[in-house]
Amino acid sequence: MDAADVVAKSKHCIVFTGAGVSAESGVPTFRGAGGLWERYRPEELATPEAFAKDPELVWRWYRWRQEVVHRAAPNPAHYAIAELEALGVVKAVITQNVDGLHQRAGSRNVVELHGSLWRARCVKCGAVYRLEKPVEEVPPRCPRCGGLLRPDVVWFGEPLPQEAWARAVEHAAEADVVLVAGTSGVVYPAAYIPHIAKKHGAVVVEVNVEESAITPIADFFLRGRAGEVLPRLAEEVKKRLSTRRESSPRGPSAIGSSQP
Ligand code: OAD
Image 1 (cartoon, rainbow, N blue to C red):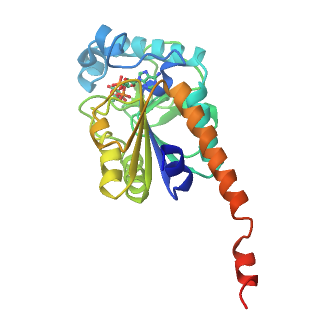
Image 2 (tube, rainbow, N blue to C red; image 1 turned 30 degrees about the vertical axis):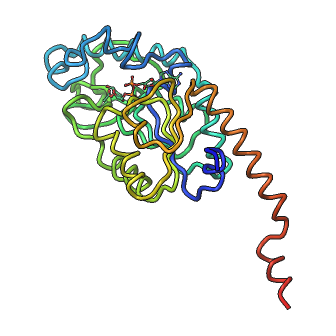
Image 3 (cartoon, rainbow, N blue to C red; image 1 turned 120 degrees about the horizontal axis):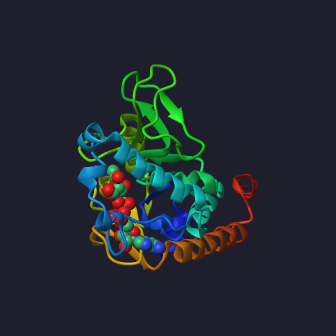
């Protein structure tokens, strides 16, 4: 059995994604050559302390990231994942990405573990605002109470959003296949997701341009760019699904009628 068979035969396939899935959309990853953490220091930009010290600097960085994503479009990796969900194969996309590109590609059941660039939250009254485009003024202020707004993302040292984490763990425990794509798998607790799935018996299929911290538990390692490998995988899965339908033309009712 190959990876496409495993995915096509799955009952509860989930996808776990990281920055590598958006790389071909022109959104920089965090680690490795050209990664954001090579050029910027996370402790100066992505911690509650950094925000308390210099909210304007932090917002400038997030505004720049919003602008990059606003100009970007989903790539074939995002579309392939959305297609697998539309086919009924993928039940949930659990992402560490904050760019919203899965949703823009048509994925419906997306669990955002690290929040979203497209929401801001008031540090004073807790109100959450949806953003349609990059913020203009930095730092933005709460229209209700005048408090400081912060990006509704998870920073280092902060817990994950409880509801998203609970949903992700539930899916991981139920999954029989987890398709891991474009993540280094080094940031916890998010990186527990494929491990939890594996522990509950899921087959781990990994797509990455290079080996990652997840590779040791991967049953299938599909080396290559997510934007190339995932559309090929989705095509194969579609073929397997239609072959299975053709080779078993009689549904449950036909089985019933063949009884004496
Ligand atoms: P990383 O930047 O750590 O890892 C990106 C992964 O994508 C690497 O394993 C690359 O080999 C792989 N990759 C790059 N281009 C690819 C492509 N075209 N196709 C397939 N794979 C590709 O990103 P994440 O694992 O998402 O957290 O990082 C996890 C978290 O660390 C992020 O959510 C962020 C960051 O700090 C927060 O901000 C809280």
